[in-house]
Length: 174
Ligand code: FES
Image (tube, rainbow, N blue to C red; front, side, top):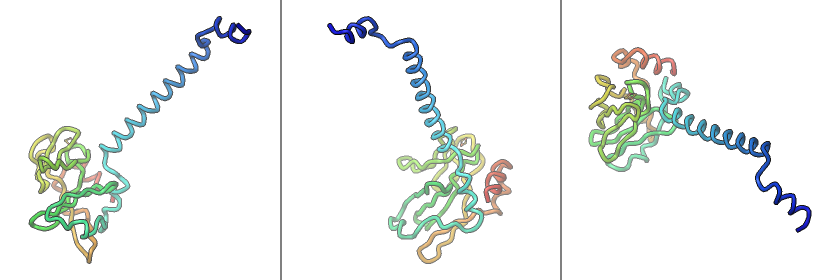
């Protein structure tokens, strides 16, 4: 046995300071991972405030060519807006839940919007069906089509019917 192997045999476990360093690195990586997961959840559940600013005037959100199918529900990443095509034409709603402001999600199987925070549900026309968002429906957005472009706008005349925190959230973003 040479001298180097003899030293390794005498000291097969990492030294205390190496162990401490490894523990510190593992704790740091654990916290970093937890932070990344938590921030993703917060971003997912809260309205995209910068996007709300764009909804003050007419905001182009899509193109008619995206709506060739007879019925379709479309949401836009980074914009708190839903566009729906049904037998009556195009409709638009805000994705912000009027209970406490989480972002609603379309459930294709049940054909309704569900809020992941407290389980409120809204039908495909934005009408509240169940949960703590009652009696508030999803806020209908004004919608216009120019050529191929679809634009939506915050309907300020409909806001007075909503809770004050909701009005402030929507208007302060405008
Ligand atoms: Fe949507 Fe509470 S925030 S149900």
